Image (tube, rainbow, N blue to C red; front, side, top):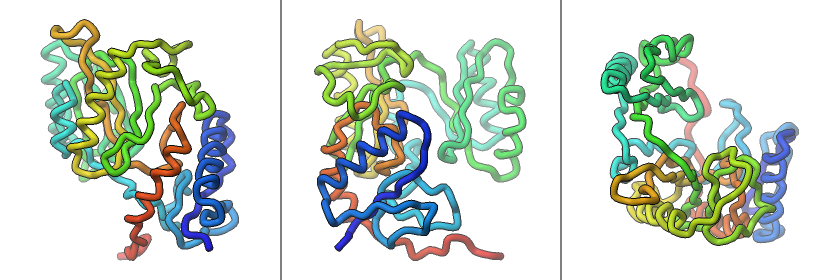
Length: 287
């Protein structure tokens, strides 16, 4: 009898298609007949905890066992490891904070608190807040989502750590060409930028990234998350210091996997299913 489901898609992006296939294979190998795959276009799917990409429709329930929002900017762990100034504010305050940074000659990075909504860099070259935001202003004024205004700092060697039940299950350099079939990588493998042509080996830098990720995993408010770390410059260390870029919901199937160990991820997913609680809230309310 099936106890978990996986949503298949018709995604045509080569890397994402491969990631989905590798993840489905790993989940099936772990769960066997307890997992069932379904085509979202042919129906709503079974009423089971569901992994895979989101259907993207507010008219269909989201049965991923992990909540779809994670307000990491409210977590003291983020502030401790950010290594940069940041403010969470409304439209008017955001304009003031961007001007404050520009007056210091510092570029600003602005991000919506609504997931996958809006990000932009506003350089301190005379570009104004309004010029950078453009037509997106209408999404934020008069009660729209808050904005996170951050000080731009140099970041390299972005690395993703998959944390379930406060344990790092697997990890991977963030490089656009990496997929699960590249696992395992050599110890200490890193990608200086997401578009780097090749990987580097530097165990010291990797250990610094993992040090940050392990502390985040142990102290963050919610026990499951995708933790993205990077290296920024520091006068106290020749290799720099690890910083926390962001944390995202640990929704298996909706995260870039890169060269992670999908079999380890599949095994750890059982912990997420233990905590699954079907939503009793209506999909929408007419007023």
